[in-house]
Image (tube, rainbow, N blue to C red; front, side, top):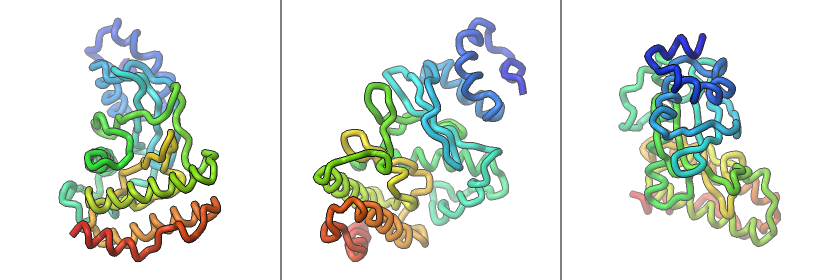
Length: 258
């Protein structure tokens, strides 16, 4: 696939200004439709330039870029090279926001997943949960607030080094966000661990695509798993098991939401 062949009608001057950054980072990894979404964001000035690849997982690649008002994070979901899309419908069950999903259409599933993560981030952010602020979504491209300082992406909770008191404070902050997510937003993260919490002065919860509404049949099970993942990680930080939240608190959170 040739980039220029897929963008007929775009002026040569515009192409020369935008193509070099985009080609180096993206061509050969993402399909033509994804590249068109990205170019549209660049043409509108939402994306000024790509800077670097921050991370890559089984479902997406995340880039740091320069936006209109500073750094932004661009999450681009894979539409062809990942098998993760097969599990995505499991996390959409019982969600009226995405009830018309065509399970056999890979791209539709992935693009719906991107919209779902945008919606989950929006609802979490609106009630004060510390997540990256969602900015734009189009197709399989999600643009959000960049978490980090001096142009450097924040490390994950697994990578950061903190003092005893800071670990204890971080745990309490995460539990507070988790409670707010359930009670105020009516959502369960469903995949929370030290790998998808960033730390920049405080913890930020990321990767909200699989988050489910409390109406999901597996919501309570997912919430218990999230809490156990946190407790297993923090128990190794020697903050004291007496400080760790127990599963019985989940019942109170769920009752508070109802």
